[in-house]
Image (cartoon, rainbow, N blue to C red):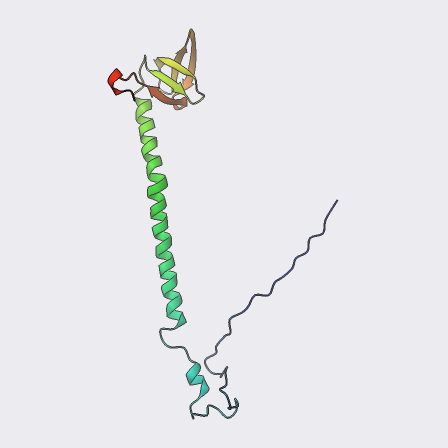
Length: 150
């Protein structure tokens, strides 16, 4: 069963545009043709000051860029920094593997390292031997002295 989709467009309010040469507002009691009752030109009173919205937009865009840069630096130190530290710890652990180490694989298998190759590790689990990639070792379990156990 197919349903028809309808697209409803909503009107958005637009900001009034101010042109430099033409008057856009009239004061009470004065017609646009007669000019300003105080003798001045209306277009003079409707012009924007030098530090008006154009300067404000440039300042806001600079602040936005500064905030985005600060946010990216913060994300680097909070996300990427600890990840890099964790990766270095894993690489050093895998480089220090030796025969007799008790290890746990990423799949959760516990065993003892019986042979270490360049890219692979042979692990003895009970009476069986399994060959794993070095990257499949999740952690090395070290025997801690009795006084240091929590």
